Length: 203
Image (cartoon, rainbow, N blue to C red; front, side):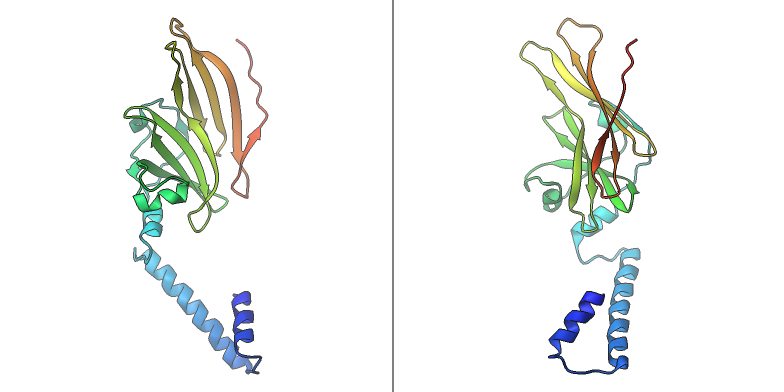
């Protein structure tokens, strides 16, 4: 607001105005902000993409891995093609998403990209106030090899946004998958995913 007033002062050709003039300008700005907030609360949006983000169904934490069966997590909704670029995807990509609880006033989105007709990849996105991505973390994907072995992830997100991602390898003739690595992340106040030390105890 102070920056706007400074620009208004310069735009007036350095003409002198009394205190009442500037108070009136501040009141006008505040009224515009209040009207915008009231419209938002009433579900009135000028931007349809902003409306989509703000009306996404909220899924509570914690969340436990569901493998490729993402319906076990909850109801994902289709991302409008016009909002794909908010996630860094081309407009013809078919994505699904759900909202998670915000952290440090940062919006958190769980995004699903279908690698094929049955195989999903899941990503966590932190978003700024303009619904632009701050950071992204892949928490689930699977990759099948030519020898019919595969790697895949399991994950767990606590109510405090402690995010654990474990990568497994399963051979063609292997009964029990092998844990290859485990990583743990938290979300910083800047909305960045930060890796934390984790110790895996062998059983």
